[in-house]
Image 1 (tube, rainbow, N blue to C red):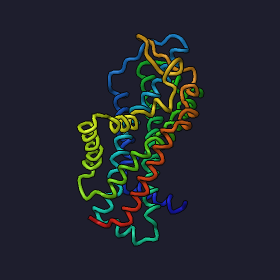
Image 2: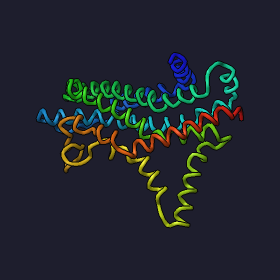
Image 3: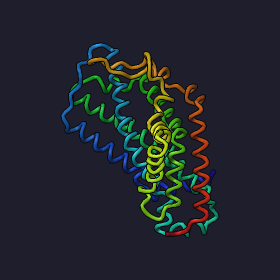
Image 4: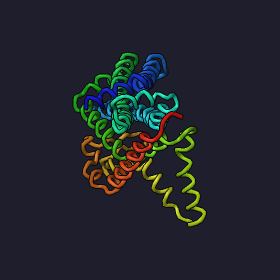
Length: 287
């Protein structure tokens, strides 16, 4: 455990973008709140204020989630490739640190640490932006975001998102790490070329679309499995009215997620790909 903690600290030292990217993005949003044109809808009832406050937090979380997803993808593609390219792999292999520990620590950083840092930055940015906007417009959104129930529910949603996304995207992370450990150059090209070739071959020779559906489902299917997205438990817009579930605990669907065969089949594939990446790491040296 101590070795893994030091390896994770190493990733922070070597990849300052883990914290610098959300910090810069948050600073840009703060500047926009300070000097940009801001207009809020008319909020009259306590329910409208409560709903808008929750939507405000969710919107910030989604923006940071998008930025985090792009960076985490790049990090997974680069983490094992960069060690071989700059030959620092020779130094790390000279230490009493196994390749398994190295790969697992990088996986933890990509699937847990980067999302957690991003969501903490989203929380801080949302609070600061709400405070600034409430002062500029003399609006009540600032006090709305400090309501304990709204705040607690959003934190539960962030934690649930981190956990479910880490499990759901494990095969994607495993594939990207496998490419990072194998490719000698053009890691971005090699990350999508084999799936694309399989997709084209299947379409041309078999006329089916199994590969395309599996990939599309894995990349975009998390909300359908992890959340209740129908009935009265989803976020939806009807005209000018935004409707939220009465509680985030009605919106998340942990029992459905953890009981889904897709989740554990994908996790098994992800574990196999990560083991393959570890084996390649043991056999590959500098480029």
